[in-house]
Image 1 (cartoon, rainbow, N blue to C red):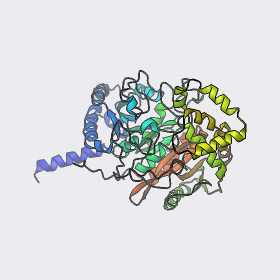
Image 2: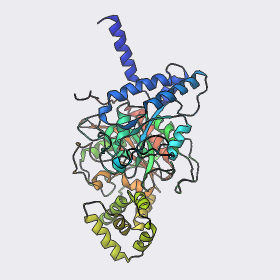
Image 3: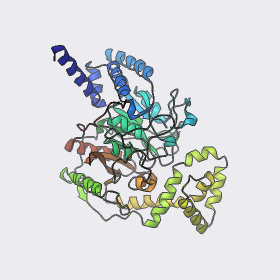
Image 4: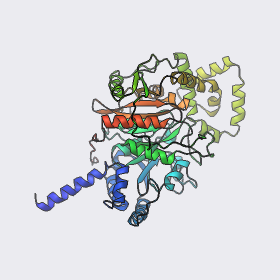
Length: 492
């Protein structure tokens, strides 16, 4: 090999490392003029094209990325960067509205939709001078366990492309795991950030209800939250810091301003009360080996100074679980039904006025149906008291616990096309946080049979800083950044 060939190979390897460089480090490189936003943007577009067959994105905006990266490069050259994310590319899920940028909701019916308004998260990302360069893949209306639709190709798991990336934020999980941009944003209505994070081996956070407001034209289920998906905890905390706010366009917005998540990031877990549960008192694991592996990782926190315990947890009995599953499934499409049914509130009032025994019969009828419910069936099946039952029981548990730990899902990513996994199996560990309004995260916890698994951390509403602190402590103790998927070239 000639000296020129050696030099080119070394340069190629150096470029490859850029794909795995965290956003906060890229920002430092921009400021020291070691790398410009434009140079990184050019590198990223080549990589996105090379691995397009993994289906991370529905739409990419190359001209926008280059134009805004050039402007950011000029700001850094003047020593005048503006915003925490200036010059950094961000991809966001295609159910989050972006003004002037194609937003399909994963549906052919909206293939040509270009919103004239931004979601609050999009608005705040732009204000921080992040560059929204792509929209991440999602199942239609974010309502599936796999990220496939009729608008684009399926989002495939970068660790094994015969397997799913998960849903409904599978595209964001692929982007983060495959080094297709340092920052990605997903949504989570029952596990849709945490499960793809677990399947793809990245870090993902569900915010407390209202911590990152939903308003301004966002298609969103009532239990959903917008959150970061990254390879690096500090990156996720920075992204979260930018998006978290109080905004009256969302009636559920938190009224208190967010804390400084970055200031507390290195505080560790000393003194935090951290509890482990393998089954939350109600889940039968699909693969018992995964709770065992997560248990080993959870015990690491005792060594790091946490007050570790394994209480006997009984969040709900099987009867409650059935009702909760019904409520959760119906909530997933509630906002959509509201927009389609003009007399929704009248129907809702009538349904709630029915005698309890009739509402119970209707609920069981809905559970026995295999096809999608109609809007009328949805409002008839609602049991408003169910939504608050798990919150009461969680609040009892959290009198003595700061962080609850459990698996994210007791299986690795399943094969594409496998429809045997039911919604209840898929979200058995995760949807309790959504329905209750708590915050939660998926932290990489190693591998089982060569595929990533995730440890779930759950905290009280408004205490995301504890999740970031715990995840960062684990990241220091058990670094996962060196774990990189074996990306393959496209099949000819």
